Image 1 (cartoon, helix red, strand yellow):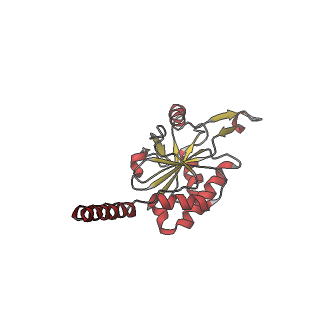
Image 2: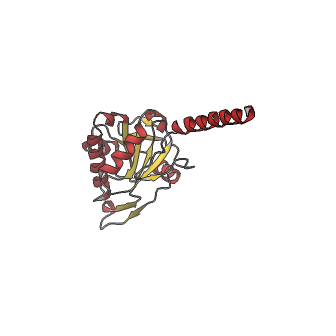
Image 3: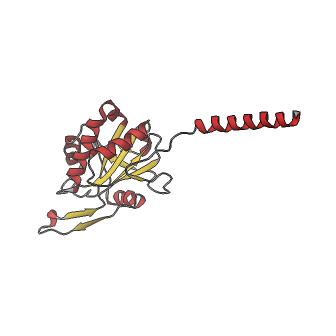
Length: 198
């Protein structure tokens, strides 16, 4: 009888321990956009901002970083993406100060620092235009697996650039976390950024 009592006491203790352990499990983060956590590429960059200051990802530690590749003379994808990110910043309210949007030009031939300094902050004063020479642009695009290709226009200076339309997102610790699809509206992006800022 005593051994049976001991068994039930031990069983109850184990059951209680198991219940308590399950109760503290954190909820998994469920993102609206593509989860890239643990991606082995897109880890850093070395470019200048539109003020001429050399920048790497480490400069933005403590903030979620959204990186978009485009060019200022882009007729549709780039302005709509930047307007979308502007709406995201407005929706985030005070949390927007913990988000850094970077517009990386794939057209350094025409996108001078002066032009970037007018174009990019027009969407939000906190946004930064990023540029490098042709070699630096090619290096960062390769590291991020970004496609871009010059398409000739009617005149030498009227060419367009085909390029990847989505954006990468890093968490405040500088880890790659998400790929944002183009043209989905602000709400799913706001949802995901709030999760990363928790």
